[in-house]
Each structure stands twice: as C-alpha cells, then as structure tokens.
Image (cartoon, rainbow, N blue to C red; front, side, top):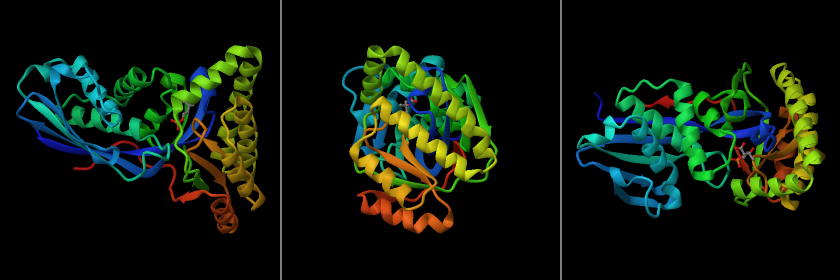
Amino acid sequence: MNKTITVSAPGKLMLFGEHAVVYNRPCIVTAVDQRMRATVELVETPEFQLEAADVKVTGYKKALSELGKGDIPKGAQFVEIAVKNILQRHPELGSGSAGLRITTTSEFSSQFGFGSSSASTVCTIKAISELLALNLSQKELFDIAFKTVLDIQGKGSGFDVAAAIYGGTIYFVTGGKVIEPLQIPTLPLLVGYSGVKADTVTLINKVKETSDAYPEIIDGIYTNIEKLVERAKPAIIAQEWKTVGELMNINQGYLDALGVSTKKLATMIYSAKDAGAYGAKLSGAGGGDCIISLATDAQRNAVETAITQAGAEIVSVTTNAEGVRIEK
Ligand code: PMV
C-alpha cells in the first residue's frame, strides 16, 4: 500500500443554466485546465493535519474523533468535512492508530469562482480512496463530495463537483440525476475576472427571496432557462458558435432578471459584445466572479482589450480539461 499520493482536479466554469439548476433544471459546465492538487500521506498519529497555504491554513491539526466539531477555519472546512464523511462511510479507517496529513495547492485563485472548494473536496476523497484501496466509483465519489458540499453550504446543485470529477464539458441535472459528457474538442471562450469575490450561498438566498415573492414569474424564468440549455446543448456539440453566443446573451438577460448581475459585470459584458464577441454572460452565482464570452480568433484581441478597459482581469483558460486524476 502506498503511503502518500497526489491527486489533481480541474476548476470549472458554468456555461449555461446557473441558479435554475438548483431547482431541478439542467445546466452545462466545462472543466478548466487550472487545477487543484491534494497530497495525502498516512501518518502514525490518529490525527487530521492540513496545510492549505493558498487559503491561509497552516499547521492545522485535530484528532480524527473531533472532525467536524468546534470552530473550523473557512479554508479548512471542505477538506475536514470530506475526511469526516469518508471516515463515516468507512469507520475501519479511523479505528486504527493511523492519521492523515493533507496538503492542498491551487493553480488558480480561490477568488475567481472556479470551484476551488469542490475541487479540493474531490481531490481529498479520491486520494483517500486510492491510498486505502477503497475503489470508489466516480458516482460514489460524487455522492460523498456532494454530501460534503451540502453539509457546509446547505444549498447547491453539485455541478461543480461533477466538473471536478468527470472533467470535459458536461450536461448536468441537479444532484447528479444526469451527468452527460458532451463530445467537443474545446470552446473559444474568453474569461474576465471582475475583481469582486461573490458568495454563492448569499446569491442563492437572494434569488430564493425573489422567487418567494413572485413564484410563478421566477419559475417561468427557470423553465425558459431550461429550454435555453436544451437548445445550447446541440449547438455546442455542432460548434455553432453564433447560436451559442446568442443563447448566452439570452441567458444573461434572465440572470439579470433574477437580480444576480451587477453594474461591473454588465459593463464587462457589453464591452465584450461591442467589441464583436458572439455573446457574453456572467458565469456562476453572479454578484462578481467572472464573465465568459465567446469570440472567434479574429475577434479575440479586440474583445480582450475591451474587457480589460472595462476593468476586468483576463484569465487565460483552456476548457474541456481532464477530470480528477492521480498525479503520482
Ligand atoms: O458561484 P459558483 O460558481 O459556485 O456557481 C453557483 C451556481 C449556482 O447555480 C448558483 C449554484 C449551484 O450549486 O448550482
């Protein structure tokens, strides 16, 4: 049995269907080649030890029996609860004298909204599964990782967990009811970071308030977003970028109606479109984080310049990245 293992998983960008996917609708998400890494070592004390310098956690340790109890620093939550959940399913692991030392590092800033929390959750569970020969299937891995996210956030669809595990570009329905890889080479996507960190749960709650006040209207918007996702799926597969861009613009209109766009995001989006992009929208919960826009090679420079002038930082990504994998 190996005593140490390193696993990596990709970040993600939501292409279509955010918010509606929390309420039993589909979305489309792509994995990006910026990766999260976790190295897991077996140690001789029955402790959980964590080094996650990227999120300001160093020298953190706890008895395995105390996992999930007491104050947990924000940067340690997902990895700690992931370990707790896997120990609950496999109590034999926590009964001996061995413990775990976990070190996580990220190739992307946790500010971008690329899904660093879910990617580190997936890495941790996959690494422990491999180290202790649990042979978890991808779906079992999804179920434990999604439970971990729900234990901490209380809300979410699990789309980010699926992207970290399966990679590629995925058509996904709430809770992993459908996880369908789309066969495409890559997407001509341009990404701009707004400089503002968004809090996913706050935005989900905000949309819930609007939905409680105007249930039929918001439900109608979710249903239209679902139709749009169903239309975008074949367009992405056929690489009909003009159609995909137009659908992005419509999706952005609905997100604005849900109240999750901001002046800064809108300025970035209009700049991208004015510079010739096929389409542009916010990606993820909204309130900040990133916009995505679709542009041909010929339009790319102009769109990048326009987004930058609107105050964005260009984040260079390759889409359709490989899912969770063992590094060594
Ligand atoms: O903020 P992000 O990038 O994690 O995206 C959230 C997308 C939501 O649909 C609002 C929530 C979810 O879990 O699907």
